[in-house]
Image 1: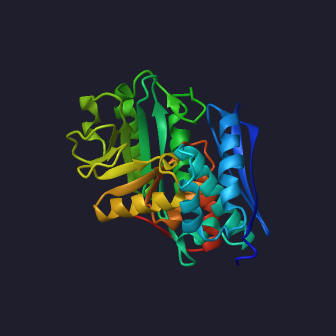
Image 2: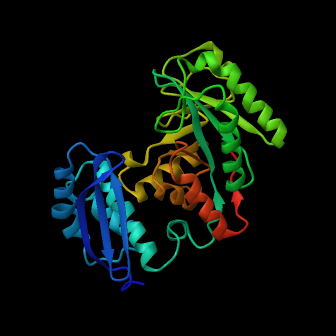
Image 3: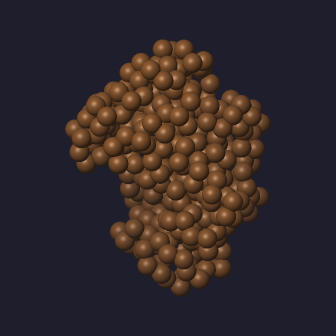
Amino acid sequence: MEYETAIKRVTAKKVFKNSKIQVKISTITEKGIGYDVIDVDNPEYVISDIENVIAPEIVGYPAYDQDFIDAIICDTNVDNPMITMSASVSVARAASNSINIPMFKHIGGILSSDLPVVSCPIASDKKGNQLIVFPMAESIGEMIHIYEFIIGNIYPKYQSRNMDGEFVCKSIFDNIDDFSEIISNIAEEEDLDILMGAKITSYDQRIEGLDYLETNEVVDFDGLLCTESMDEEADISKINPYTTGSLTEMKYLINYMTNAGITPMIDSENTSFAHLAIGFKVPIIKTCLTSKILNELWNVERVLKNPNVTRF
C-alpha cells in the first residue's frame, strides 16, 4: 500500500467552474490521482502556497497515512484553513483512488455504511432566510423521490427559482403556512416524517410551529436548534469543513461534539464531504438542491446494497 499511495506530485492551477475562476489542487501518487476545487479571492497566492510550501513537505510520503500527512500540512506556515483542508481532501481522494476503494471506506473503515439524512433549503428570500426540509426517509433513493415530489407540488404556485434551486419569495415568514401545508400533505401521502425548519437572519414569531431552527445564536425554541458555531446549549452545530484545517482536525471536532451531546451537521456542496459524512458518522449533511451530493450518496447506496440511513 505504501508504494501505491506514495505521493509523487502536488499541483495547483486555475480552473473556470461555476462561472468563476477557482483553484484545483491535485495530488498524484504512483497509482492514482485526487483533487479538490476551492473558490478563493487570490488564486495566485493559493497556487504558490500549494506548490512552494505544502508540496515539497509531503511529496514522497504515503497518502494513505492521513493523520501523518495532515500533521505535516498543518505544520507549514500556510495559515489559511481553506487551503490546508483542500490539500488534505486531495490527498485523501488520491489515496482512495490509488487502492481502488471508495473515499468513505478509506476515511471510516471497510465497515462504514451509515448514510446521512440530507437536508436542503427549498425556499429563500432576499434577506438570506431559508425554509429547509429533512425527509426522514429509509434510503437516499426515497429522499430523492420526496424532493422531486416537493418541487413538483411547489412549482405551480412559486415558479421563480435561484441558482441553488430554491424557490424565491419576498419573505419566507409570509409563506411558512403554505409550505408547511404542502410538506404535511406529502408526508401524509407518502407515510413519512418530513421535518421542516428555517435558517433565519432575524427572529420572527411565525417560526414557532417549525421542527427545526438554524440561527447564529442560541434562542428559545421548542424544537431542534442549530447554531453556526459549537454551543453546548444547541441540539445541532453546523460544520463548514473549510474552516477546520484538515480532515484529521475535522474528525477531532466531530468527536468532541458527539461526546458533548451535540449533533454535528456538515454544510457543503462538495461531493467529497458526502463521503466524509459516512466515514465520520455524521448524521446530517446540508446542501443545496442543485449540488451533486444527493446523487453521490445515491451512487454509494447502490454500492452498499442495503445501507442504514442515520437517525438523529
